[in-house]
Image 1 (tube, helix red, strand yellow):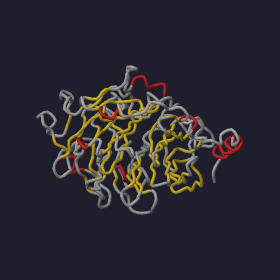
Image 2 (tube, rainbow, N blue to C red):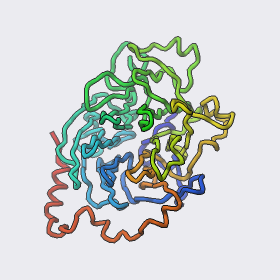
Image 3 (tube, rainbow, N blue to C red):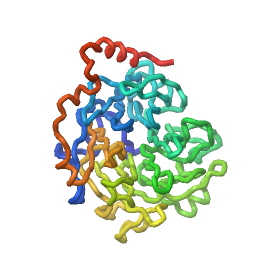
Image 4 (spheres, rainbow, N blue to C red):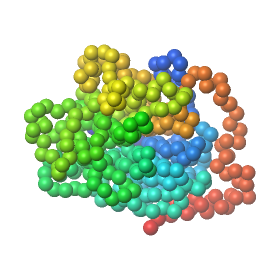
Length: 413
């Protein structure tokens, strides 16, 4: 089975996906530029979260969480967990609600070992590290692929996680009566309640439209048909039988689960691109894009910009080729390609400054998109920023830093 739609493959396969040229990515709008905000992030950065003005970014392979402060990747990880890291396992998802941080990863007794389970922990961010871990979800169904990882916080603080099928085929995959819990679902992690949505093959991207409060996701297909979905509570995305727009026969024959209702995706790529992170922008610097949805991909290094319709419950297209909400193999995608050369994009977030930040797994970097006029206003002197993690007392606090690192590495109960 073709796996081109898997975003987090082993590093050995990364050169085949989203190759970058070594030059900066480009965007197709003369009023905006791309800059490399942070670089040198090792071991396959996957997703990130803002805590205040700081960024916490995950390293898939070694289970470390790194702090990016003032555009500088700090030298000591703020957390180091033991993770299984084969295929799509590893440190996979993060979301912050104030100073409370949720992490999702495939836990092991050692880095690179067998997965014990996929787990969600809740931490507190104290400005220097992630402390006071609490296990909030223990997800037994694990596999080296289709573990998902997209996380998002709703305006009310509820935190949601997208989980793939983990290679399982039961009731939640519209396949049989066997209930394989916590697979192919979007679920709330901070409170027990019914699954938000089911029938999801695999997903690396969740976002909430700030104008409507509605949830959207990206979903990875098999040999064909990746998707972008407006995800309603109680929806069924159709996997295992269905990816992409369904025929009447497929809808009638869908096995279904409880009262979850099928709906077609808002957009599909017939030829897989491995869509990952997605984001809406509601900010003064990027006001031009207030009616847009940005989506990244891993296979080609593209950043897509979709225009929302007037009701913000679908997408609108100027050209005829995409007006059926499908990019068929022969269709031009020039209308929706906003940027190129990003490598394997794995996350897109809006920062507290209202700018767009993008994680590239293959480049080990975070890029930022900003108006051209803001470039001249930036200061380039980063002297001292590389050591801002330590503060003025770094020399006298060296012993404390070493002890804190050892404590973070220790297994948590």
